[in-house]
Length: 287
Ligand code: NAP
Image (cartoon, rainbow, N blue to C red):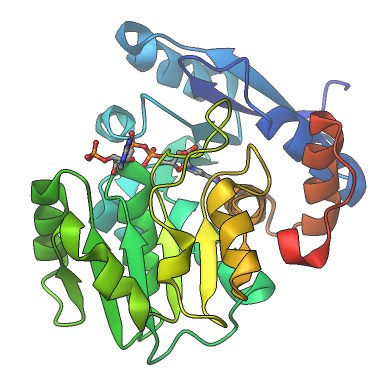
């Protein structure tokens, strides 16, 4: 760092578990950019002060994580169309003092799904299991790919109905949780967006992988563990599997690209996260 270093960071509460500093600092180093990225613990009551600090100190960019993704929008000068539609911001770009909010979670997920598991989503039947905060951005980004159908199912059925209704699009529909098995039977892609199976509850699955047809894609947003029990079961069934690490890498890659205007070194970013887990390079199946 020197007096020309451009500053970036992530705010959240809690924040010490975040892998974003390891990943983005590797990206700056790899790209020869004089940038530095830190993690900042910001409590909800100090969010406004934190954003004022970003303006005053001239940070070029900021990532925003739980619990600030919705409330931060009130402190920005402009919000990109996709973040507005999703109703949450995870990336801020400081354009000469004007703070602009974006959402890279959904597009990061879809880029990862297309590059690592299923390049063509047009016409496909996609089942989204879970309708929490992460599902919203993912469904929005999936609708841009002209799928044949997006079917939503959530343990609390009302949330699935609300999410489907908010898209007002013929291809997005909700089914009761009890109908999930039937919905999965002829699906091309089944995505777990619930937190079921996340460490330490690594043996739990939100649905029986045997409900998927062999050859379908089983996808999981969870990246700790890298291969969840749902994905292990689906691989045994003959499905193609796709873990959550790629989504994390690509949401950060898009943020890097918005901030710097340069292509993100996604492979180096992925390796940085894996090294921080103490994990070896996963097999292509796990990616
Ligand atoms: P969230 O808003 O808290 O939503 C949690 C979802 O899980 C809800 O749909 C909830 O259903 C469902 N759920 C929880 N326990 C369940 C159970 N026992 N059975 C069935 N459904 C259950 O969380 P989120 O922010 O959307 O995150 C969801 C997951 O995605 C987390 O594991 C998170 O780590 C992961 N994620 C990954 C990335 C990435 O970069 N790879 C990014 C964001 C999130 P109800 O509505 O019925 O409670």
